[in-house]
Image (tube, rainbow, N blue to C red):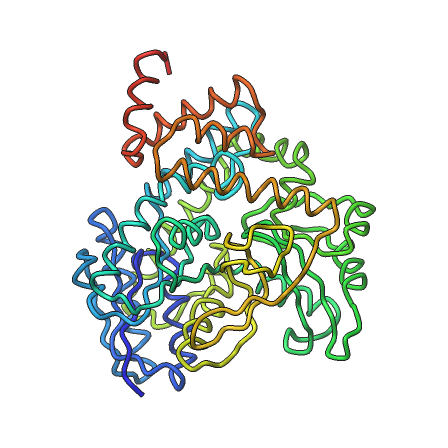
Length: 447
């Protein structure tokens, strides 16, 4: 089999050891020749630290893979077979602003939901489209494996505005659900069938055994007994049991923000006041991780990385690459074109759905229709995503405001405009498409 070249953009991320470990585990199925880790000048130090750890990990595994570190994206992309993306425009300081600015007004601040999620998309979409333009010239046959959040919106932007079809969006949330929920009933994920449907960070799922018996209600009852958060980056507030039972499906952990908004905001406001928002904690954790990574005797992924929130990242990203390359037909949950899998959403939009991963990409499995309670929410969220993507591409202030007003986690009226304006000013270095709107705000504002 032809030796392959894999490029990771955002290679200086603290998640990279997880990725390298995943490749090493699949060494017999992945004929890797070279891995290129790419970052920007501001991430040079981290790139060198994590790149050296990657080399030690590969050497310990007895592999002859070449690990290249580069600040030149175009040099790295030439003739790549797979390109994975895990970058953050504005680094963690931008995430801190995404979380803290809305909370100042008593509005939820979160990385991929609410105002923070909209702004992460606004900053990221122009960059991913630039990357795609480079790929079209330098590696037009490569697959783009996107882990950059908000993954669903980024994937849809690549498809509908980048006109690049060989892209798959990924998230480790579904696979985390699989491991945790199978354990609750004394099973392994391989013994169960999981059916996911919805959007990235906004999906629901059902669980069956291999005989076709529906175990969703059983798992649901076990989950109601849990008294702590099931995700590193989400505060714990118990779901309303009557409501979840009525859905008949298990919600994504992020649904706490939508089903329990007031309770979640109260917890987040306390974190805001104490400077313990998730973004601020992650910045400290990352500093600790990179101190560990510097140790020349460290040759494995440290256990502390699990606290970063990237558990099973490699099980998603590396298995996807492996399944495409080898036409394994692995069943995975990915963000891909709907193509009729969810009949309540547009045919060409991107959904997060159980799919079979083949040599020509994901084949989404048909789900059908949602109950009204889920249908109404998922249609609203998809409309909000579409408007956000359009705002990111056009730099339209009106579209950005429209996205804010559509978003169920952002109050409408003047507070929406106030938060939008403040966030545009706070992130202006990373929003060149909004230059005109930002100048107008600066001219008329005291912010």
